[in-house]
View 1 (spheres, rainbow, N blue to C red):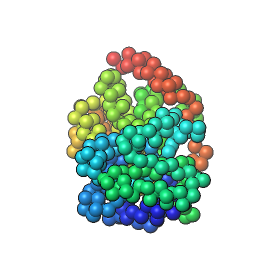
View 2 (tube, rainbow, N blue to C red):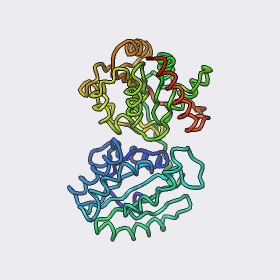
View 3 (cartoon, one colour):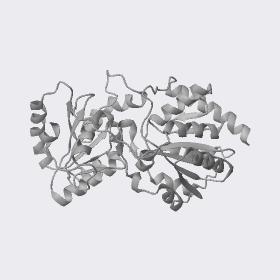
View 4 (cartoon, rainbow, N blue to C red):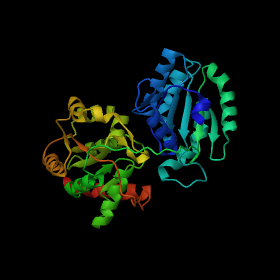
Length: 374
């Protein structure tokens, strides 16, 4: 097994579907253990945690992530880990979404093209692992990596689709009963013809299908298919520049955690027309269901501390309907933390419009909507 080859004792990162076997193994073996395995808020956070582990123990940590998270590690890698600064070594496990020649979603294509090059530019020596890679090849790569690690350099195993396997399947669940798709249906109804910015993953896919089922236009929605954690900031930018009506953001708990500083910016902005809804199932569900820390975080309390005039938590559809109406009639920014169950329909599709079509129709609608609201 790859982890035996690496021989590490501490793991941290952000879950990825390409690394599902690894994430399931870590959860089944260690769970969330502050001394062995931590699911981080974002990839930069994981690098810093791993750096602290190395400083305290002198041992080599492992940081795992989807390649989309490479952007989040650039600063700590360049200004903390680099041998010209502190020379802190670690092993990266990077799921390779958007690999050239392999069909993938549009948000992964460019990142896939630059994945290996970006690692090389950061002076992180990469080794690509595919389904055909023998254990002896991975062991030989690790043998070449060890002298680099000893010099304070970092290295990476770039993992192709289905390259990692583990025979045991881990299932994730919580005690909530409200389904995310039902919650989003209520939100779409409450928003009416107001613009909605939805976060990456299944939330945007479900919103798209709800519009299809209702025979509604997709012009009302901006589907943030990439840039996890930034949907609320996109919504804020719209709300500040279209102050005549409500702007709705459908966020996720993992996304909200990834760039939680955005809550402070939103709270300080005084954007009284922004309604920020966090679909909170306590999990990174789109990439497998591994837990986030929101089970122990009071998001409404955080939002209020950041300056949101109103922030509440709901668990039932009736509560959600009531709070959506209050948010629509009230003054924001407002946060609604919606406790939801894990799971989605097995036949959940993907948007059939292109990202550029989505952007253009949404921008065209904002011009019309903004004019009507004033």
